[in-house]
Length: 432
Image (cartoon, rainbow, N blue to C red):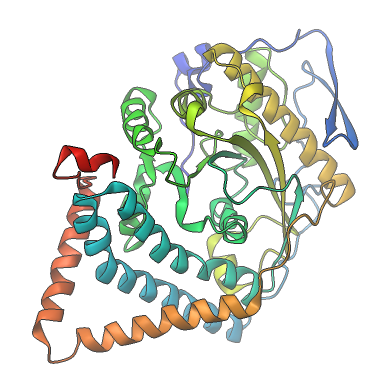
């Protein structure tokens, strides 16, 4: 899902790719830091910056030596491939029908009178569709999702920071949001190319994901404009940010380490140095209407999955997500101090992942219960039933339904392409 991070000479020199230079430690000294995890576990980390080869023989997928082959959790059999294709067909067809039937009245017409109530309806409808993905991961594929650390209260408006191990990290956050009844209120900051994804690009637009070019001069006004609409405390909000800006690979890690060495920053083995401007912008604009920031650290066993690994159910066997609650009062207000704080947070994540590779788990695991199977099955049955019903009506002899579907497709394609959202027709309705 993510492209390579491109560097030019100016970015390498000035650390613009990482949105700021943060002085951390002297290059001629060892870094020795002890961090308490939830007040129970201490992990020590010691690295010499002059010895820049910390991930030699290390694979980002498993924490094993590079010459050790990591097998998939399950083999890709014919039946498993057929099951995966059928699951994808169900997910795509239900997404398509949900969008073309419900998006125009909920996202277009209702929003002309009330942004707040439009978001409530959209979140309700599309939250039920998104809930089909955790059902696929946990119930059909049998993936074990283990949560550790702090528990997330269900009614908070929060900013969640997550490391980016692979292209499907953002989908596993749905497993946590479903447990907190906040699935339809998730907003991601993603690269703009996802707008071109068939059907799903329409969904990202309707759900008001923030799509960026990863060029700050272009993205800054976009982020500020979108975040300014998320300040209503009546609207539940889970804003998800991946500060690394791209998924983790060994090549990107080496590049990140070179930049860290040039700028006297900690050498990280399991995460990339974060970009800080977007984080500071989010916190600055939403500080008065957020309850907390949550630091999520995600990893996988036996290896990091790709999207099709999830679809076919061959990987992963386990997903581990560590949650750390951070009061907003602990996050500095100035940009330089906030940048330093974010770098320290990713240093902590790096130590946490190193500890996970040694221990096999995060501390204080098992903080969330399993998803109730009956609720998942009922949700899938309703979504599939509605899709079948509307499909029959679409191809029936009732011509106006076919016209509605065609016009809905045209509207969604145009609105997504031009990034257009309706505004209330009367000024006093904007706060309704």
